[in-house]
Length: 103
Image (cartoon, rainbow, N blue to C red):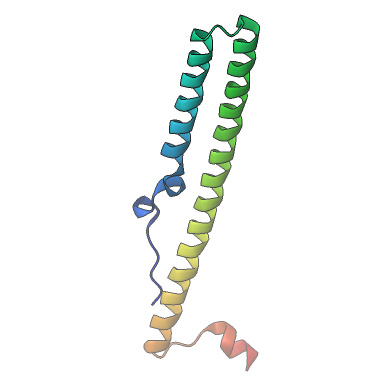
């Protein structure tokens, strides 16, 4: 019998999301520090615009990663369930219709 880890017990995004949030906060703090150091408003807005774009891109990538992980998990669960059914059927002397039609 194949055992899979349920999606609710897996860490979401491998724990990467908290690291990405930490990095974005760091970038925003650095932009604030630049403003305190006298960087021009135009340069500061450019930095913040770049950070904003990076955040949007990161959000899209994280959604894609999660979607792919969910699809993989669903497929794994279906395969594991089918394998358990096949094993149980064989243990009870019930043979697959496919294997009988191939004989």
